[in-house]
Amino acid sequence: MPETSAPADAALEWAIGRGLGALADKMGIEWVEFTPERCIARMPVEGNTQPVGLLHGGAYVVIGETMGSMHANYHAGPGRLAVGIDINATHTRSATEGWVTAVCTPIHLGRSLTVHEIAISDEQGRRCSTVRITNMVKDR
Image 1 (cartoon, helix red, strand yellow):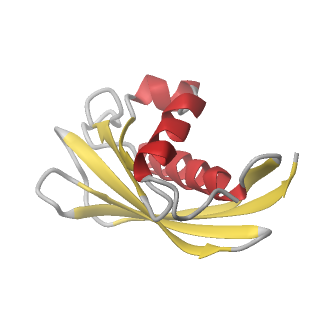
Image 2 (image 1 turned 180 degrees about the vertical axis):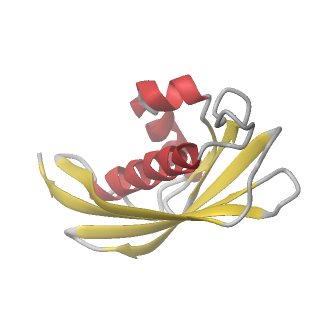
């Protein structure tokens, strides 16, 4: 596991170097912050909507899984891999324009399991969705 006292900029460099993956790139997801304690990303509503103009529920899940899995892999450390085994989302509001911001906070960082909560809000700070992901950590 990486040192939890590692500088925040080293954690962000790790995340940027690893990349977000092709799907997250297509959706326009961008890192805002990545530290051992939490990570923050944002995603545009435009291009990620349902036919009626609301941010697609699956888009909330994509940003949540991207962030939770990345943070779990950072926690896992070299030679280990975190893979998602459970995810759920509760949508409480619909974003229709601008950007959403997602804050990913670990609930549990164990040797074999991690659990993260991702709170996703619109530009007015109103929570739109809450995603929870559990990752299994294993040797590569």
